[in-house]
Length: 280
Image (cartoon, rainbow, N blue to C red; front, side):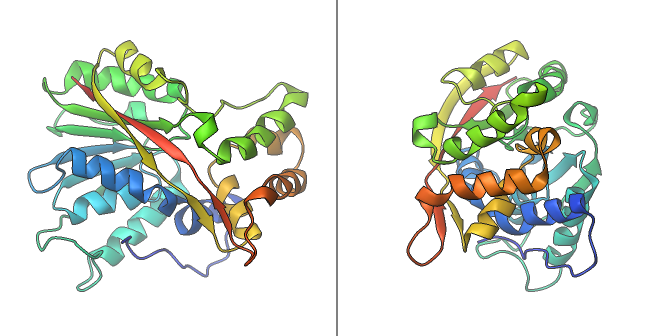
């Protein structure tokens, strides 16, 4: 279903380790979202796709495996390095994901925040921003640039969290907000979780909403330790770590996961994500 996961053995800094946790543990939870968006937009040969905040590249490589011409941008050098290593593995004979087409394309990966994406010569017909952890303010300048540069009718797909009552992870994410409060550094709440947040962001950027959907993306982990590592890799707990310390955050996240542990030690949280299709 997904390209080969990175299994490097080199010593890593804490930040590099978090990037690897994202690539190995957390990112695959969003595959149902990626596949649904790719299916709805008929991603395949002839698609020129720009992926903002592409992370360690799973969505980019899945689109390339369908034959799309893909360019991915991300500001995190460690995630981008893992994406490049994944792309190199995908280009080897016999290593394409199951269901890939013979004309699978090579993805182009570039360092940069969303607003630094070069829109001049790409001819992109589809722009995606599928990381639900990205704050709206980080996307707005890039989306405004897309609205003013891309050809009319081009699609822009945004993703966010579903209603809190449909997302088990919302209870765990409250730990981040509570622990960050002492310094007044509470990071942005899980981005765009309100009923009209995606639509409001699109309209603010000069885009026209053109349909939406919901996708079930369960978070499943082999044990509690993996769950803690995966959740912290999202970046949503960074402010809490800065306000307290890593050990305290890990302890409280582990406690918040208790209702989702199963008798065999695995952890499963049911979650729903929203996506919006907008048009230039």
